[in-house]
Amino acid sequence: MAKKKVKRVVLAYSGGLDTSVILKWLIEEYGCEVVCFAADLGQGEELSGLDEKARKTGASKIYIEDVREEFVKDFVFPMFRAGAVYEGHYLLGTSIARPLIGKRMVEIADAEGADAISHGATGKGNDQVRFELTAYALKPDIKIIAPWREWSLNSRESLLAYAKKHKIPVPVSKAKPYSSDRNLLHISFEGGILEDPWNEPTEDMFQLSVSPEQAPDKPEYVEVDFKAGNPVAVNGKKLSPAKLLGKLNELGGRNGVGRVDIVENRFVGMKSRGVYETPGGTILRLAHQAVESLTLDREVMHLRDSLVPKYAQLVYNGFWFAPEREALQTFMDEAQKNVTGTARLKLYKGTCAVVGRKSPKSLYDPDVATFEADTVYNQADATGFIKLNALRLRTRKKLQG
Image (cartoon, helix red, strand yellow):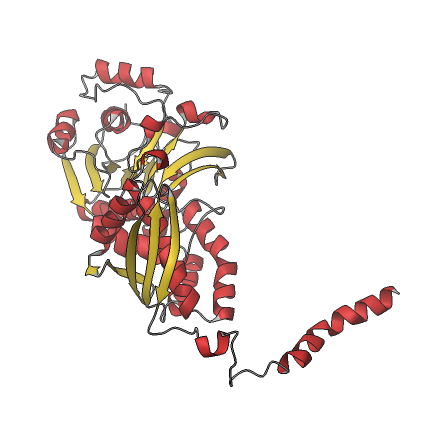
């Protein structure tokens, strides 16, 4: 029997166990029509066959879209222009994909005349917040159905039993001892064997990178060109945003670069242990910082750095389509106008080190910075500069006696 009046729902669909069950459950519980949406974000999963699978389970229609270029150009690159990193380590690979998926779901809902959207995020994670904040920001009157917050199916076994009862075709592969999410920026692992933060991840878990121990014994060098804060070429070859990130993933992955193991603070209030592979993103962040070191004014850089934790928190918590993130983005992009140049990095057994940087807009002047004789800097000027800055310190000490 239908729970409430819903005529058509757009479901974020992957074809896995959870969303396959959700598709049938929506039809059974809400008596509604279900339109599925599958986004190719570079997750490497096989998308062929999803159309037939969705229809066999009861979907009236399915959208399967390659959004890799939009993902990198309009979401990843703006975030990297802002230098975003959450709690010092996490490059926000999962977080930044959710607003794009949510945006497309709302757009499809409008195109299909749907009055609701649905997703497979659990009630304990961040993704439910990210999907739903996006949806409400773009379509305030949208209805949202989150099955994990409603149904009694609370385990893999109960999902499999439901699938068997309703003859739903589901993957027969062995269950992984963890949960993972992949796109062009990264792959994440959490849950299962990783719930004990003392357990070291097993080597067979990693998919984008070789172990540092197994990486080549010879360093590999890579050059990344930037224009106004955006990467535009790798080793002198211009590439589209998605292809550029894919190339850096390849280079970083074969050298064991980009592995991170952290305990982070979720928006919903709990701590969570996550293991991430972000080979291309790690290279990109360090290369970007190298070009910024030449081209950003000191006070602009320090101001930007003070705002990075807030910006990263907004992305992590799902506020991509919020006025405060958009306002911060305007500042970040203004600061990036002169961030043009090239960074050279050395990749070696899990490490990524900047070994060179150059820019036609460099603020670095060797004639000023030199320790040799120069005519542009009177070292005696430092005496007054230091005394003025020491005035409050001297005054304080005199008062202390």
